[in-house]
Image (cartoon, rainbow, N blue to C red):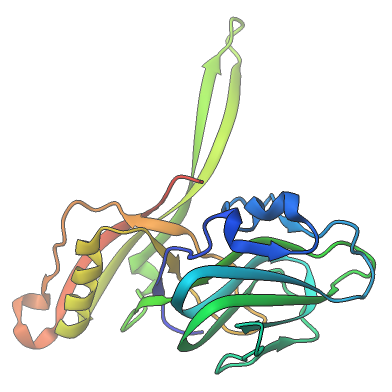
Length: 255
């Protein structure tokens, strides 16, 4: 397991960026952040490989590729399809059994990214991806927050009506990720970098546990800093102890 990290908001954000020969009607589900809705091939249940391509308007720097809620057992990823260039960490999986996959590689400037979908986990069913995040690392944390200083939760937005007979009718709207974080004794360099990210006030994909391989839990919500203040100060009132402070993250609205 690597350290927690902030990634830039998903660079895939419109259906016009996607090219594929099948499943065109579900392109929007590849990035709408509702994992219950999936991009899916249509009429492609054989073992023949199929390709989905993400086309950027110009050269774009990426370093992370995340596939959430997918059913791919065998797949590979590469960039700039005319040359089929592989990433520094080659993404070529043949026996995947997990529904979420996280990949990190050296930053590379690309014009396009391709996902070649070879096999599904179950034979003779459509290939499916709940969310495809193509992005770049913004800040890897110097240290993970300790268990007692990291409080993630899911907040449910809902409307509750009291009915004439006194019963309750509940209308669930959406579940949203939020987390309270406290960091202690961090370096001045990391504190400065964290403050820079906070000052930018941009949405960030937060990955609490970016495990490369088969054990990633698939948690990668797009979040913003919900804290009004950046309040990191000298720990223990001593310049030699580093900095301590806290902040809160909250998931952004769905597209």
